[in-house]
Image 1 (cartoon, one colour):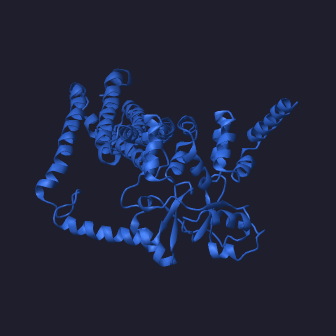
Image 2 (cartoon, helix red, strand yellow):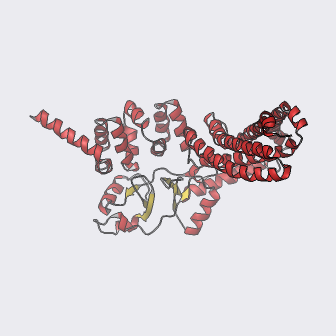
Image 3 (cartoon, one colour):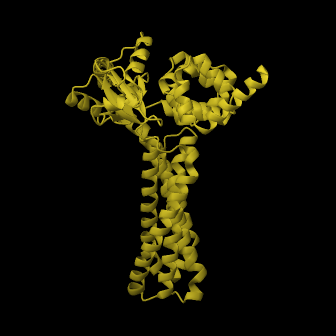
Length: 438
């Protein structure tokens, strides 16, 4: 009877976890870390991942630290990589290294990228151990947890929703003098002041000075809380920056500056100029393939820059949006298909609109309906291809560990020129007789 009763009880618990993961996660948040792990292990991995994702991140990070290696690998390979990165980043540096080594190499690399930020951005100096609570938590629950975190310096408590979005910042003193049964939702003073992780440090200094802040919450592009910047950390960073500036004056800096040595500037720039030259000859080779067509229909040479220019602009627009998305962590290389599909659709619609305008102009300019059809069709094809490669190139480069901002434009220029010339001259050559061109 006892065994049957235990089985029934476990089925009820499992059913509750699967149907109401949000409520179940809040209940689990009050359990000890080892108890939470035991409950998670009893669930199918998909259910465990949903539960784990809804537990207060301040607690789930501690749970992750105490997980066995096998369970950590299985669970963190299932949850969203962005969530995984936010949780792992809360651990101590040595533990982070050990935990990441447990994961598949591609996931390990992705999490490291998500946790790293350029040295001149807000994300580089954040303290990820922000003390978080939910809006429905009471003052009594907050004070109980704060007392348990004796080794953490707490000035504010940060209120988040179940998706980790920051919704409020409350001074701890305000919480301490409130009624024990009061919920945090009634104590939130207003919209929280926060800064994006990719914002420059200059913006951090300005915002903290203007608002007279001791701590500044740091969020990602989706307003999810990543951590806080503490005033003393900002001061220390400012001191280090001064030291680096002094070193740079004596030539110790790694990046080219306005007054860098000529040899340094040449070493940085010349390789890319040589690569650009090679790609230019590649585009010229494509034009050379249709030398006879151009000699016979000389007006084609007049419109070559039009096709190349429009496809180049289309590709540059897609490239800029994609690189920005990668920089702000809106998208990752694994999202390439979604981004490519969107840019192809944009390129197609814009291509049709531009093609109609171009065809109309060419029809009256050259008095040739055939040439208008060719350049209109070519414009659509080249703009679709440009949008596709403008999205894919930076993602491929980042996936292979290259800087997409540095290399993408050269590769894209080659692609847009080659396909632009190929589509226009190829169609003109193939359809010249049929459409009566020349």
